[in-house]
Image (cartoon, rainbow, N blue to C red):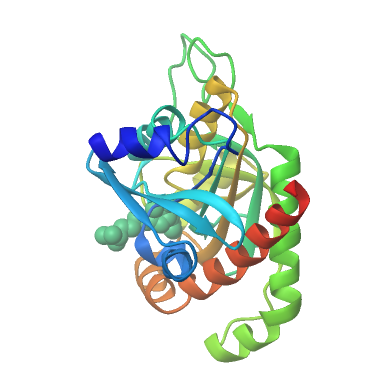
Amino acid sequence: MKGLDMLLSSSVGTSGAQRPLGILAALPEELGDLLDAMRAGSGVQTVTHGRREYHVGSVHGVRCVVTLARIGKVAAAATVSALIHAFNIEAIVFAGVAGGVGRAVKIGDIVVSDALLQHDLDASPLFPRFEVPLLGIARFAADPALAAQLAAACERFVAQEGAALAARFGTQMPRVHRGLVISGDQFVASAAAVEALRDAQPDALAVEMEGAAIAQVCYEYGVPCAVVRTISDTADDHAPASFESFLSEIAGTYSTGILQRFLQDFANTRG
Ligand code: SAH
């Protein structure tokens, strides 16, 4: 905590200095080359807090705290809470992979979330299914401006690198989708399970294990957040193999390309 106190009082403190942006993924592959780019630029100061490493520095012109949440809603909520309380972040961007749920969402496509919901939350009949008890909300909105900026970065990435990616990885030309992302503490990997999710949430585009937890904590603290997910699998019986190969071979290329464009744009618009 000594290192953390030092960082807070010097570089990321509240007084005068611009608050950092929190950048989060579940797994290291989902950060792409972000930490290497930070090391090559400003250098990185790493603080360990609650069994996680928080990397503080500037990358692509933006002061950031970059960390791995690990997997699942509790892990994600705890990490976001630390980013808010210990690092005073201004906003949060999550980058990672997800299973495709929408019928038009294919492996290699990108989903930028407009709203997020916990598909495994059910306190009925006391509260409506999916609603967070005592909060009265089931769908948490992503920050519209941040989500739009993230989607624009994804569109630029696809326009500039999509054809090469499709040729290199044998996927089709990637598309960028905007809409509902659903989260739960399950890796969804059967045709029956993904069909049940479609029945329950017909407009869901993608399923993952962290996004809606992050959105809930950000809502409760009034912190803007946005989530981008590259589709690694279609949450069916092929999901485990598809996820593993996409994560190890492809996910990093997407995160690198998307985050670089997003951060450069974020730096420019913020001045
Ligand atoms: N095998 C991995 C665990 C992966 S869990 C390991 O041992 O490290 C899957 C991760 O990718 C989660 O962080 C989740 O957000 C995302 N994800 C990708 N496809 C998913 C799917 N079909 N269902 C749920 N989450 C998925």
